[in-house]
Length: 250
Ligand code: 13P
Image (cartoon, rainbow, N blue to C red; front, side, top):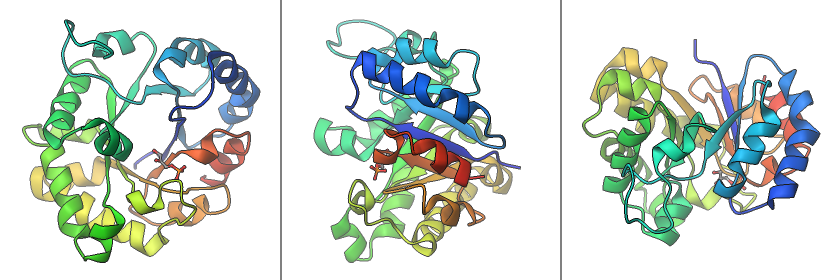
């Protein structure tokens, strides 16, 4: 059985003080919710403070990005072993990183391998644009992103990853994908592609989240779909209502 996982991607929000205050505000309530893994992904500079705040709770900590090299002349980047004292997870290939910061499929693939080598669980993001969706290219594009991201991995490595299907048109827009849309693509373009690459057993093990305008009122609908194992939540993870969202997921 796949344990559902709800992760909050805080994106570029909350100062150090705000991040710790918010973590302290909601951690006890979240800690009591059983049957779901919970992750906070604050901005990098706030990771140590948030990790300290949630210490002793069930809440995990993730980074929003990471570089694949071990160290060196890469101004502004963070190496895997800089995250591991604080993080168990790392979001890789978010559509905002791909769109605004030039992330490529090849780079995402290297980052996944580096994360796994350091025992970090990658949360690998895939998802199509509105134009691709309207052109009927969703299936082939998302499946291609999964193939590129997972190239060269073993089945055991693949099973350790989490994939987040986040249609770009649903992110921050309030226009969430319907359960049928999200669950359909997660099944046919994501899980079936993992089956094609690594076999049915790996496909049955890997956890796949939906992301894009997930709110306290719609999370239960997504969770009812047999192929959706949780959510990557943006805006709604920044507010105290995140507790209700996570509770509604179980
Ligand atoms: P929203 O929940 O704000 O739509 O953001 C989704 C997202 O991009 C999470 O990574």
